[in-house]
Each structure stands twice: as C-alpha cells, then as structure tokens.
Image (tube, rainbow, N blue to C red):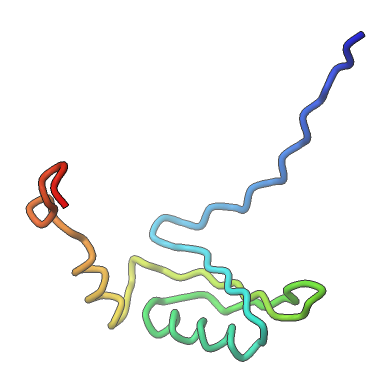
Length: 96
C-alpha cells in the first residue's frame, strides 16, 4: 500500500528589492559590530534606515538595510567601475 506524500510547503520568499537595490543582512556578535558594518555600507551607497533584531539564542544582532547600488558614493563608485572587466581584459578561453 502506498501513501500519498505531500511535499512540504516552501517558506515564502523574501520580497525582491527594486532594480538597482540590494537587501543586506549583517549578523554579528554585538550591536556595535553590526552598526560599524552598516556605517561602511552607508558611506558607499545610499541606503534605508537600518533595522536590527536579536540573532538567536546565543545572543548577537541581526541588522537589515537596503542599499541603492544605482547611486554609489566614493569609494564604491571607483571600485564598481574598475571591477567591471571588459572582454578585452579577460584572458582567452582556456588560458590562466
């Protein structure tokens, strides 16, 4: 006799941020550490206000913010420009 197996219902997916934006989650052992990472991101990109939550039973902090990669500030602007390698910059297929 076979029993019908119903697959588990997947958890709802997180909403996708608008084009050009990225949701960032930082998990750190202390709120101060998470805030320092968020400060660096806000220095490089426009962003929303951070939201923080407890990170679990072991303590720690989980921080969420959304960054707007379409409006980077320095130093992200120069890093993004130099990280976009053109086809001429890449080695031919098979070369290392």
